[in-house]
Amino acid sequence: MDDLEVFNRLQVLIQSRKNSSKDDSYTAGLFQKGQDHLLKKLGEESFEVVMASKDNDRQHVIMELADLWFHTLCVMAYHDVSLGEVALELERREGVSGLEEKANRKE
Image (cartoon, rainbow, N blue to C red; front, side):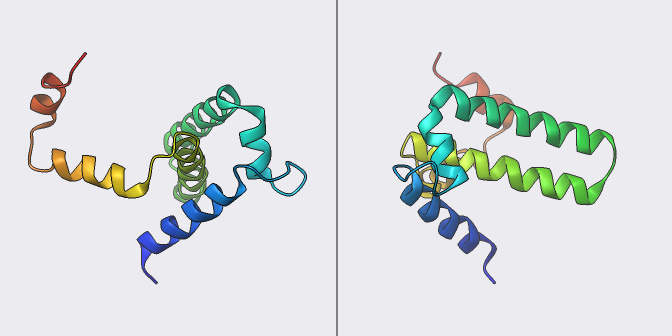
């Protein structure tokens, strides 16, 4: 199985559920509650990754990272950002010092 293919399939599924009935899926409900709710969920999942990591519970870290990535893909779908666009940005940064990249960001 191609690891990235899972992300591609999930992105297509999330995009297809953006305008579905909230009764049909959890994902549709997220979008219907709006951006603030999506961002709250993203923040919650980020915190849960941190806590699982602090507990040194590898399986819990994996589960929480999956939740975080799912909700990240939802925020991406909200803004119609594709995996390819994020990959291009990461590729642009490849080989550039993190310190240099941050210094060159536009305010």
